[in-house]
Length: 298
View 1 (tube, rainbow, N blue to C red):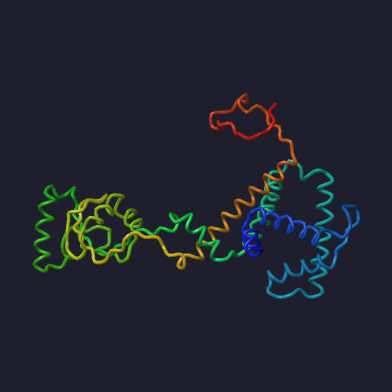
View 2: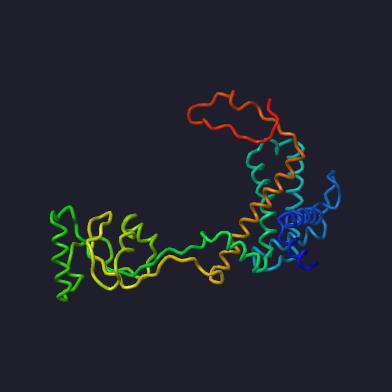
């Protein structure tokens, strides 16, 4: 029973959010300057190691003593200018800075989720709840002979004559009209066929018997005789074959849940007041519906 409770706790998004909060606090403690925000700048050993690690990831080698001193000097220069910019209020009402800070907050949550790899039972449960995401369309291997119906007023009769020639052993590549479509397609998905021939073509293929020339079949370009050599019906991919895909999807879903939980938790610390949007006159290109939410309105 305790082990089951532990597994349930580890799968709970609120548990992940708690871990996120701890991670944010830990990162803040690790990389912040060793003193409060005063006129003193202290470059700690942790900060120097962090600077050296960034250099090593970029250059695939550690910096030498001269390079490291230059990097530290550049950090001090950046810190001085940053603090003065903040003191002057240059960070206020700057859309670029606001968006960058939002992205950093969201990246922290995403990195946390990406570091969590749940067990197969969790992934299999997600897979079962989202089977439609792992549906695989039908696939076909077939040959086709094209008839330009704009140039052939009796296209059905022409197709019947070609069927007779095929029965007599004529080469199918020598029959029909030329076009940019391939004569044969191997193991092609129904989605790809729709893009090549038009949305109704694959529906007609599903009605044909494999192994013999049949038609005419109508496409977006004209009429075709078709011989299907192989057909694989639509199916759902087994979990084992899409486990990596399921993991990525699970991580994305968890990221969204944690980000929303994070936002809703932090939002409770603020009283949000929004002016009456309906009373604001917008230009024709800027018209937008009013947004909802439980907020105070002026």
